[in-house]
Length: 269
Ligand code: DAK
Image (cartoon, rainbow, N blue to C red):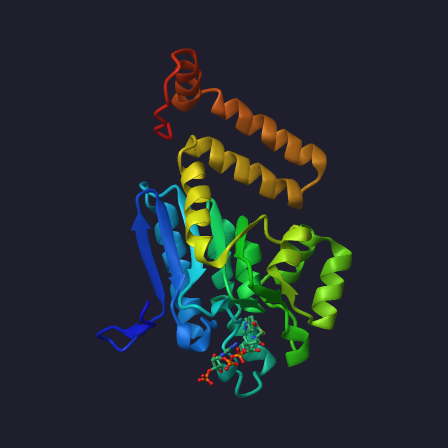
């Protein structure tokens, strides 16, 4: 991948969206700056995620970083030039909701992590539903050492994934961990050799894409809501979504295919 380009109105193109069959690949494309998050990324990433999520041909979204060195090395530190008055900071909060496009995606989002995955890059990764990391990658939250804390929902999501003790340890010490340790603590669910990352991610994405889309969507919804609400509320939602799935063609198709010993053809209806 060549790195970002500039379009005719002078805007730096830092996000690439490519559809391969039923999988949308979204690439952070600033390899010379370790795919760090500048204002152009904050502008363009949400649109790419929303476009992929609303594309009826797409079943799964993958986020990855361009170049050999990083998924994403966090916020672009070269943009951290002047201190920001609180009122100005407050006024930019809407702009800062850039990561919510990932939170809100109905389709599963997979982070394909290689190289450095730091700070805001790890915030992006923990906003995704599934994280797959290449051996040799390095993950961490350097924010506290820069006089900051995570600012895009990273801490609450991270502690839900790894637990309070691990979250405190990693965020307060700012120590980075290797992919193997990230796998051991459940921060990533799969590891791949670095030259096999794309293959492994494709395999997982294609597996999900082959399943009934509404079941996938509702399973994701109930798992996410299960984190944020009490057991009774989440169980009720699960029951309601289960009942809805009983009315779908894909459920009947799955049962018919089983009886007829053939592969099912799911339509998302
Ligand atoms: N920003 C800008 N450029 C970066 C960068 C970054 N985060 N990380 C790396 N680069 C650039 C380097 O400057 C260098 O560029 P040149 O000098 O070649 O032009 C190139 O990438 C290669 O980096 P290194 O030469 O440093 O390579 P090394 O292998 O020696 O080190 C490294 C790799 C990733 C360990 C190191 O570059 C590093 O420590 N990078 C910084 C990591 C970091 O601290 N990231 C920021 C975390 S704080 C906000 C919301 C969220 C956030 C902030 C604001 N708002 C709502 C406003 C989030 C904050 C963070 O993410």
